[in-house]
Length: 221
Image 1 (cartoon, rainbow, N blue to C red):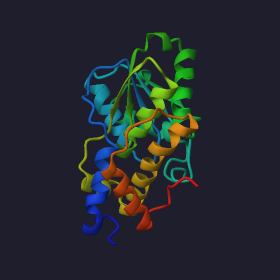
Image 2: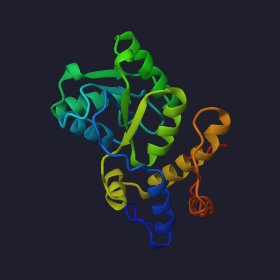
Image 3: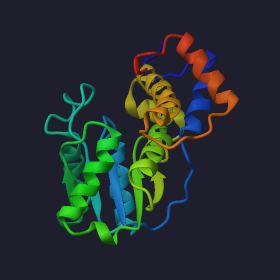
């Protein structure tokens, strides 16, 4: 398998999960943008672009490190995101950094606590979660559970699937992440970590076939 080419025999199932995990929300003005840390610097790129377009006046970048990001972002995901956004022209004064979160639930909880410390929380009625494309549905479900009452919009750097794989440089990694996020949509509500969302039959079938094909690196035990 080419490192950046999606094989034809997997394409239909990968595209099914790719489309399901994105929410296609309209980009509209919100009170704050929250860039969720990961290995994907495109999150910071798109957050900076949206800020410059006036979609939100302030940004929180949130994220510590994970085994998959520590080599790329040794000072922490949020810190590197901030530096990247400043390099793209976002004023330092527009950015807050939350450097401790190690999962999406903590991203939300720690961001709320940070905003409260800065006396900004009461003014926040709407947020945009900026994340990897396949992370949108999971992030939305978690935020709905942990931050009730706020309007939530999700956004990601708008790349087609093949271009996204090329930007990451590892098709296996992208497929494993897609499979892992789809599993979490099904598992997290039972643990009380996210709201329940419908999983259509074609998504269940595509997920099962990709698991059978060996894409299990991101599955929960």
